[in-house]
Image (cartoon, rainbow, N blue to C red; front, top):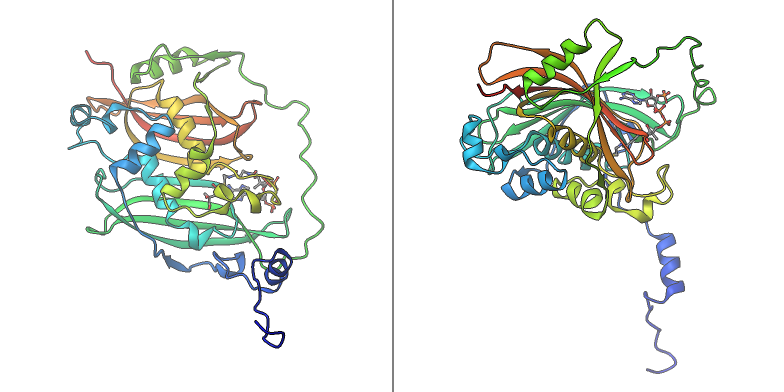
Length: 360
Ligand SMILES: CC(C)(COP(=O)(O)OP(=O)(O)OC[C@H]1O[C@@H](n2cnc3c(N)ncnc32)[C@H](O)[C@@H]1OP(=O)(O)O)[C@@H](O)C(=O)NCCC(=O)NCCSC(=O)C[C@](C)(O)C(=O)O
């Protein structure tokens, strides 16, 4: 090379590269709060074929080991043709597909309700198409850099168009432009002087059949008592549960797999996907009952972050038990609370499930 020849740029020189990065635009992913308007219908482009592998990976890592989802003989005894897709995995896969368009910008999952499975049982090989409708958008008065969006999401069997999973979900979504507010959140609620106190007695069912829940509720009736107990199992969060499981459902939320970006966020670290937290707590609860079928979930809320190294435990309250006359099972309504190693609630929600009757 002679003195006159222009020098080529060494893009990998650290100073040069730092300057190049400063000047380069970022090709963005996801949508800010301003992109959502009440009534918008979004047909999600990503699709997913529900596989046995995905189902088993989700169930094994969240400790959902009900044999009807693993073995043909157990599945047939429960009225399925073969081991079906578990409702938790179906719910997570229906949500995962929506993330790129709805919440990839960094929206924390605040809550979900009316989770239902209106179609026939879903088996491996089903292709999922998902759409979401914007139900409402709201300003957050305590956090001007975020808005709050609620969507109704429906997952359909692509072949039959049948809705197989449906729910309403609420997230905090970053705004492109923060709004001016009245100066922030309302004052913390005062502790009521004569606030409600916990019942004197906590009753634990003797077993996991429908009759055990019914008998426990009868024991608690007319006394200052609740049917409430904790489950022994805990699950410490690591790379597979925090990053691996959401990615296996195409959930691209940076909260779960980009520790670099999350270091500057309110959580300061990557966080466990809400569906992993709740499914793990439900797995602990189901390990102490004889589940027949899942019916639905309501009033789900995520109270604080779960980060790598945290351990997810579960606590259950039995709210109601109804004998619907069905031979194999009765209906029970539970409240499940997931909590961490510091006994702080991280998730709560109600669940309706059919619970097997004791074989005569
Ligand atoms: C986000 C944090 C920091 C805010 O904590 P904070 O103390 O600032 O706020 P807050 O008072 O609890 O709530 C802030 C605002 O949200 C409202 N709000 C609250 N809940 C609801 C609800 N259910 N429905 C409707 N609105 C709700 C609430 O009323 C309030 O309104 P305001 O600002 O006007 O006063 C705190 O709540 C927190 O740590 N939550 C846990 C979040 C979490 O870890 N979620 C799971 C992991 S993220 C995830 O899974 C992602 C996903 C699935 O992949 C994906 O969507 O992409």
